[in-house]
Image 1: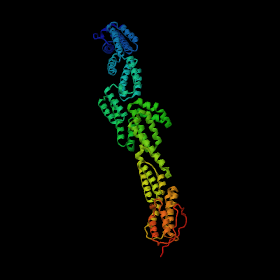
Image 2: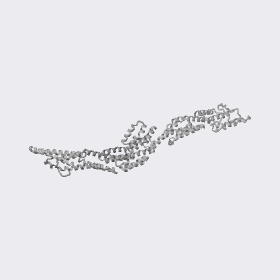
Image 3: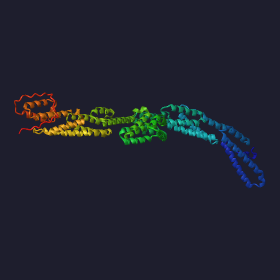
Amino acid sequence: MMPRPWKLACARGAPLSLTSASERYRKLIIRLADLHSALEAQTDERSLGAILPSLENAAATAQRLLEHLRQVARNALSQPEAASAALEDAQAIDPDATDLTTLHAALAGLRAEVRQVSAFRPNSQAFEALAGWFASSQARLAQLAHEISDPALAEMQTALHETETGWLAIGDMLTQGQQRPVLKQLEKLVEQVRPYNAAVADWFGQTAHFIKEGSVMEKFSPNAPLADALVKGYAAWDQGQGGRSMEAAQRAFELAQTDGERTAAERLLRLGEISTRWLNNGNVSDNPLTDRSERETYALFLPGEVVDFERFSQQMKSEETYLKAMRLGIVATLKGSSSAGYRALFMLYVLRGVLALYEEQLEEADFWREAALNVQSNWQTHPLFSAFDTALTRRKLVLRAEAALNALRDFSEIHRTRQALNAPLADAWLKEARQALDLLESALGQWSDGDFRAARISFDEALSLLGEAEQSGGMQLDALRGWLRPYRERAAELAEKRQVIEQATMTASLTPDSAVLRALDQIMDISEATLGADASRQVRIWRDQYRAMLRTHTDATLDKRAKLAHFEVNFGALFIEKHPAYKLFRRWVEAARALPDDVQEDVQLVATEEIDSTAEAPIYVEDA
């Protein structure tokens, strides 16, 4: 019991709280200490012997009271029975301090305040209600912290603060479509808040279930107008409408209220900008633009997404393993990570495929094509994928045509080669090559007809078109051009030899020029050696016709009538007028007609008589 002389040292009056009670006794201890010092300085030793023990006893008693109140503060929430016992001990020490009894009610009030935190129940407007609950609860707990020092209160304050921070972050995560991080965060929040409000923890759990089953995370965002703009923007991008997606992103910017929401709008905008710029400015035909777009697309990944992407890529030991594992691996990871990251993955694969196409790495391009389809097969009609897929297919068709063209080694195979070039998708890239094949067929016909100059021109034009085909189609046709050049040279050589014949027909002399027969023999030999007997039939006929005409012209044993009869038979051959020596033949006939008439009998020649084309023709000598 406190000594009676000192009971009035404690102030009375105002309603007592744990803090004020503790402060009262702390001040009492200070005053007693001050009094002790003053008495020691002013009182004789005989008087001190009666006073100081009582003073020291009073100070020790006040110190014990203060310690009991501190125990009350330290155990008010975590060990209420210990707190009550400590308060009763304090009352026993100072029974005259009747206002200490009010602290029992104060403690009950403190616990009631804590129960208010646990009593909250989320409703249909949980986002707004939770914000108010977090604010009021933390304000309530902050007031309690002035009264009690129970570690349980500090833990509760920390848990509610971290839960509120995590909950606010979830709003931004939902805005960015981050399903996987949201679920992980909600799981953490459930554990944090359950000891203090089971209803809120259950609501977090239910929200996690809905989000796990949902397909569009943005719809769960507390900023509904912003979420609607983002959802429409991503839907437009998925349909290949980059312009509309950028318009939606601009609306989202206007509606954004947090940094996270602005980041979501920025990523959607960049997604639309990169894809639209690439599609509208050259796309597959612009290598620098594709390279730049690929780097910008990779930069759209969040830091965690970069880690996930690189880790997955490093773990895959082969392309086959990559494709098999990616749906449940990187695709599922980024689909749950963010709406922009998931789409950036698709665009990244497409652009890397185009870059591989530039390098003529068609197998690698095929790999990236399959990877893009594994992200979302419904995007097979997306303009990004269509541009890449069309270019890849076109390139394969062009290379197939290139192989067929370079494999051409016989004019009889032109039809089959043309079939390999029958690819409407690559029409613009194979047009010149098809025209070149047409010219080769024309050259073959012209050669067979003996029009070697026209054949040489056709070969020249075909070679020129093949050069254009190499430029437009990105082909290498060295093998084909190397095969054709000798034909072109032979055609040019034969054209020169035909010119020898045609020049001989221009002379007025009736004396046969041996160069003509020699030229015809050479034309036939070269033609047969180059194109074969079938394609050389006409020039063989020409050679035989010339020999027959020459034999008639130079045969001195034939009179006028016989000569004319022989000439008539030979002139009855089809297309004799196309013979390069036709004018010479006409002069020879005229020369025969100019011979004097004779009285010899008619010489009857059978038109079908076989002509010995190998016989040496006698030399005709004009009469002096």
